[in-house]
Image (cartoon, rainbow, N blue to C red; front, side, top):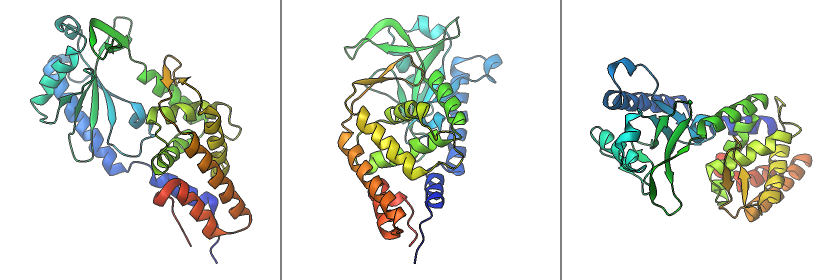
Length: 297
């Protein structure tokens, strides 16, 4: 008869959710090629060794499940600020440069970002960014009418958010990133409609006061139960503070039903574990996480 090994099964599950080393190597290689293009076209030879391409967002935090969206900041020289007639034209200028090497480079409808697909299974979302004399990162800002106000820029907080996230994840012994990846799988499987940024933000705030956040061997079934309970209580909110505390992350998803259903299934899984019913235990977790949750019967 099969024996339930909760710690081992969740350890395998979480390990399988990490982006493998081969894909990471491919991402880093393509980022180096992209940065070299930016250096050659925007910066002089003396600046070629400096960093002008930074990763931010879920890929930089290590919470994404694939490389279908990698958010990047392209650091451009201050001359771009004066050359552009409108804030949105910074992306147009970047697209023109990148099109010389990448046929897939496209300026997005928001007028702020450029997307390109440098290789199969990779998609870069590039935000043209400047560094002010005070050391702040700024990017083109939307004016709320889906058009752009000339020479209006806003501060970029993604790097600050990543720093705060990394600090908490280290304090939580990696449990924060593990939770974010698992919840992404649930979000896809049960069609909860949450964005990656919303998942990371809510998990970040949840871990701030979670009693077992620093355990080296956290009880994953209890962690899932408590987080789904937390989501149920958060479903009616309009917005949350961003990870860095400088922005609002608005609730654009109706995830309450999916969270309640997952909470019920987690309770059933815990009962199945207590009564040593492995078939029921695995069935509950696969209803939450789909086929990505390993089954050993």
